[in-house]
Image (cartoon, rainbow, N blue to C red; front, side, top):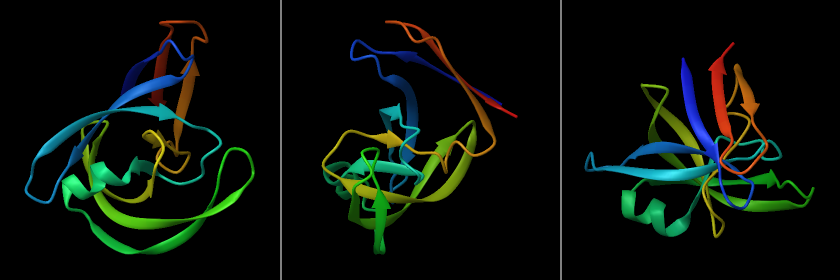
Length: 123
């Protein structure tokens, strides 16, 4: 029950996530822990297309700056803390973001300095 990451040069808390595509291809992606994002996972549209995940609709989401935006929603498969999980994934033009829904029941510890450790621990 622990996921480790690092604070990058932009002072973002980064953890690596394993994504599983529809042909069982695995793709690793460095993702920003974003406590202002309420969904599970946001990924660039190009990455979602590559994984051939199925679009299941659209939904409105609140961004960190408080603005509301409509996102295409996909059903995605990830490996999170050693477990295969199916989650809803929002498509965007931004970098990969891990939201508070995926972090549910985890304690987040961030050493807020360059290269600092990021620890996600099951509560």
